[in-house]
Image (cartoon, rainbow, N blue to C red; front, side):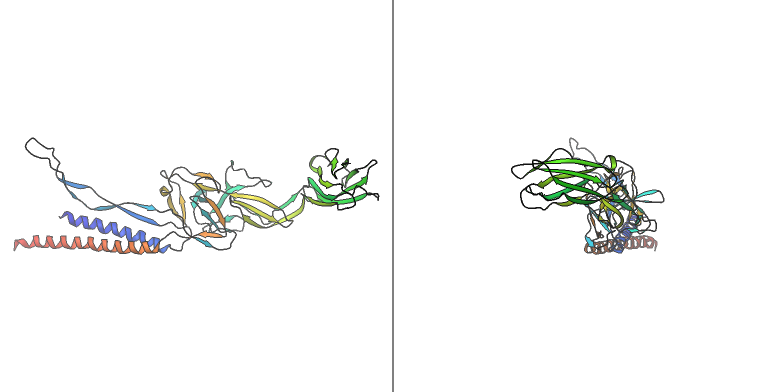
Length: 394
């Protein structure tokens, strides 16, 4: 039979594959995180009809004569170029700007995806639309250990937090010419479980100038310190002012208090403790940290999203659900966080859309269609030649 007949058949098959790939790209033009694919062709084996010969003394050399036997699909490669950004305003929608992948776990299998549309399930886990659980590092007392193993990210709405008060800061002026009764400043402080108590600071004028300060904690702890009056309006503490010990120790900062005449403006400018608070919302930091906002005004890191990168992303295998799995040719998974080299940054409230270029895909449709038609014409022509051969007998 004619070689051209089988070459035409291989061309039909190859261009049919190109049509399939192009059709899949167009079908996923609005799929978040989808990466378009391209078809690559290569010729098959060629039949040698005449070998090459070297130049001789009386004649020149000759080139090989070969007849190709058709075409085949060499591969279907994935284009991992960045897709456009679509703002959604949803806190659980995330977009990677760079080459990284979200890591999810489904059925015990580790998957990788660029689609950042996540939601909370009944167990307060961040999950993809197909049920993959987002992976990362969970914070312990607001501290992330990225050297540990990744696990499921869970943001329990019943999370509670309380911060023990360890520092109280005073600001303002104690009048150097004061002659009245001792002045009290009462500070509301908290222990590690959010229980409230008072610390009373009493300021009394000292003999020879300056001030004596006494601190009394509701727990019974006391401390005393003196403030030496300077000629330039400064007040110098006699040493550290610490009330209590251990977990309940409170350091009183008096470094901002001055001692000028006449004006009395001493205030408690702040303390770092807080009562018990419940998780109300969270925000996404640029480094992938999920920062919780609690009802007591406290903000604390709850978890950090893990991102993955590969030496050869095009070697990943599509696993459905806009996810990929690692293969022998993708290289091992390298885990890190947003901002790490080669991974990229994270943006909350946005999604990465498909990187399908419709103008290019419709052009590919035309090319594939014409290629299919041309190869069909080869088969038709070969058939006519065979028909002529069969009619030579007449």
